[in-house]
Amino acid sequence: MSEVAIDPAVFRKVLGSYPTGVCVVTALDQDRPAGMVIGSFTSVSLDPPLVGFFPDKSSTSWPVIEKAGRFCVNVMGSDQQDVCRAVTAKGEAKFVGVEYVISDHDLPVIANAIASIECRLYSVTEAGDHWFVLGEVLRLQTVRDDDPMLFHRGRYGGFAEQM
Image (cartoon, rainbow, N blue to C red):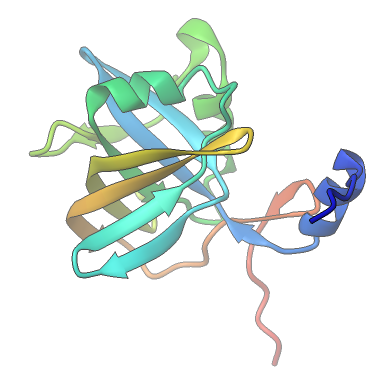
């Protein structure tokens, strides 16, 4: 089987044509929230209930979340771009202004997210320049029935219904 060279810029542009939902994965780093914004979240299995996402190997947030051994996937609403900006901030600015509660599983659950899915780390598998993370669902809930935040062609946005 021969290897085909794929230009990373072309790969990113073509795959950017496919919109994804936006989630914030959170955990506790001792008593402080840790988190990362992801667009690669999916349901994986009903029995056992598993979900998955793909953090970049260069992420500085993923090792903190992995060390915690559990995480919460917070599904962002189209009106929560400010939350994403605060979670992607560096240093002391990270999570400034983000409202959250600590769940019974000791996880930061972001206030007003569309849904939250609390998980125990199930497995981590190498996948090229990313990790494929599986989480076993411990608790999940829908918080509000609003439009999700989407990521498409390098921009955040919302869902527009056609009449």
